[in-house]
Image (cartoon, rainbow, N blue to C red; front, side, top):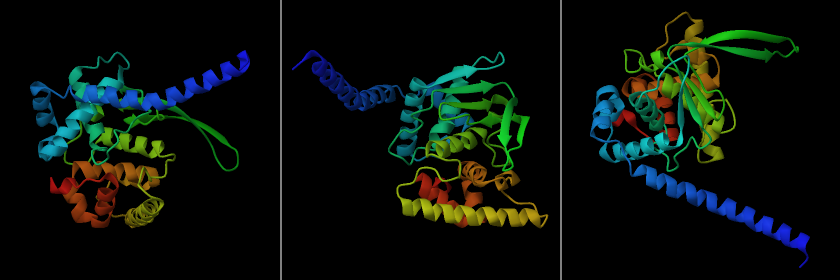
Length: 272
């Protein structure tokens, strides 16, 4: 075996070792992190601020606590515009983010690296091109943004508004967008176990979106935030807010939509 060939073989074996060993390292690291579940003080904070945590069945609550510990151990939280991120802020945001994945065996958010937190709503520049090639540049004021699959931006002032009279939750909204991006698009069709399930959900989503737009066109006031009528991605994110914030109301007003979300998330929060 000449030297060049030996180098190529060695490099190939090293690559195989990395590809095989990396998932095992992740599993071991997460098992270690999951053992550091929230303590008594953190649980009291979750009970006080998160109605979903209080309602969770015991097995799901234990799973949520483990997912929280893993998320906190893996993700970076960055305060922006002088904001100091406290452990309580990290915990409350993490708990709400992890709610979305409770029905899955996988942890999710694997490619997410950081959560950026602003004191209040923030301005982001946007640039887009229409069908005629005309480029428009503008600025938008946002409460949150799933910037890409590595970062999520949140307004802390808006995070604190969850749990009110309206089914509003910027953390759930943006992490629903993240799941949508993670699945390879921005069309309101996140992970689902099969092509048939994805097509069934897409058909339901398009029908519900058309119904919402028809209500708005008549000048009536819809129960879902009218912002959901923007496109399929926004509809999925807004519907996810309602699913976790006011599941019984959603099930009563939009039973088919509720059942579709329950099947997709693998959860039934109206029964908690």
